[in-house]
Length: 184
Image (tube, one colour):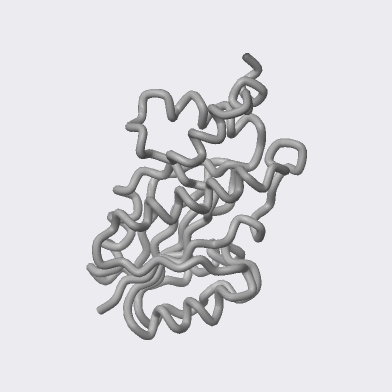
């Protein structure tokens, strides 16, 4: 049984233009999220756009459990992805990771799960959770959508190992971007 991680391209996410209008940040988020996925043995990771989600999920679920992950969580602890796949492989139908700001950062589906989000990737997840025969909630996590989120990320990355969100960290450190974000 294959496990698939579908990473939602950041251009499909909602961004606060003045805070994260820099496409370099979005590219770093996506790169670091792919790097995070690469640390999961036996998991195929693919980047998808919002319009590709229904077909990509359908294809992935024909082979095994699948997780849809927002690309604006490059700092997500890897154990959350492992836990999500563990729940799905143990028979849980739906796993969700709620975002602190509202919405979701992760939606995981077991083989044959019905009620997949059809148009907007994380829309309808509340209803799907209510209808699922079994579900699991991961701890809340924050997505990167505002300057305040970047300030929090900059502070959170300081004690973390250098490999966590390495490209995002490097960009924040380069050209005084972190100083502008943090207000130093």
